[in-house]
Length: 336
Length: 296
Image (cartoon, rainbow over all chains, first blue to last red; front, side):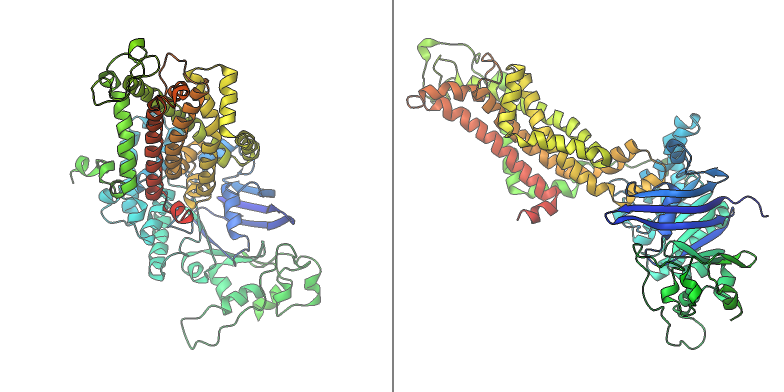
């Protein structure tokens, strides 16, 4: 048994109440994140990856969203059972989050310095009372340090800029500075690069990588981009229709995917080496959460489907140490 | 590095150098409205210097003097020989104070209630139904009812008119809050550990100011107008305080013989309300371009 994981999500179930009844957006999802580890969560739109992140942060829009079951253990404490005020204290200080849209994630009426220092001050006020007196100046100094850390040139001048004066990549750097200003031990990055140019994407990923090494924090990166995972993550969990289809070390998943969905995802991504064959696609679309197939949720689209797939949820099997797949034919896949 | 110098925060751009201000200055009807309103404000502020004598001093032998080009009788005298110019400028004080009072109460309670209703979704239904109930009454009828119940006085007028207009302000604020609360920076603020009040006061409200400012300028105009109506009906300030509405009411009897008794205060009301409305339109054009397109 390895050391205690930093974050341990156990059988998380998140539901949304809708006009047509309750739908389960995240269904019995479990994963661990070790301190300093980067876990990637991949999946199509609607597979439940963002909802998972919001559940961890306690930021689900409630109602209609609700965590219906499971545990979210952060450093051994169940976030779902913490009193609200305590959870609020952890947000921003122990767990940071960055969002997809850098253009709208900053408040247009305040300078970026105000926004970075706000996070620091929110948590200082709660923490050391002594820091309050010299709070403003200290927070500003810290804000400039953070801007420097995320690679914003001449931070002393930039700190008083307003969001509209910055480009998308710069704003995402500011977002990262905000999220990291209190040195969180876990960072949730929800599609951190999706809205950015390809060249900027690479810069932001490099930056996150460097900061992650420097600060020793763990990152959960949520994306639909396999390239981001390959470049950035240590381990990856592939989500499909609210469940984890396969989970394992990045190298293994890319080299020897055992779940047909993972295999399908990978073969629909172009390779940089060698001849580019016609890209394969996965037939069909993600099932509606209202009409989920009874057995394996991927079964209707699967090219290796057998009769047993349609009766009952496939058990998650450990294919190799640390490599899990929820497919009854996973072992065959590994050898294939 | 000269740390102190580099780290010091530069002064914020003064308002008169912002693009918003420049657009306001170039907006013709806003400037006309501002001129009208400033004129009325100047009358009110300088009332003690402008008024030739006590607005309540009667002089029976000098009654019904028509307006003439004269320092004292510029606007004539009324049926009791009271100086109309004195009464108009002191009436301006009352109108503006009541308007200001209503606007202040609207700012405080309209913002508070609107923000709470828009942000805490569970309170939204009950609060808005209450607002609907209040708004279902014709506004002036409701004001009359409240003023009559509380007994006529200047304060009553402020309270009655505030009760009438606060639901409208709250609705406007709520609508903006509903839009802004869904924006990602609010989510980001929540993710960085900000509490409800910090999110409302720092992240939501500053982004809802434009429609609120526009609304308040119109409410000021409505309040001036409605105060005149209440006074006209005898539900506003007591007769000892000169009020434009009271003046029209008293002058009504003599409208054939001495039309200036009603025309002069009528013009004062019109000037104030028109000025405020023109300002409101201008502010709306400048602060809230979306509304302008929708309303053509």
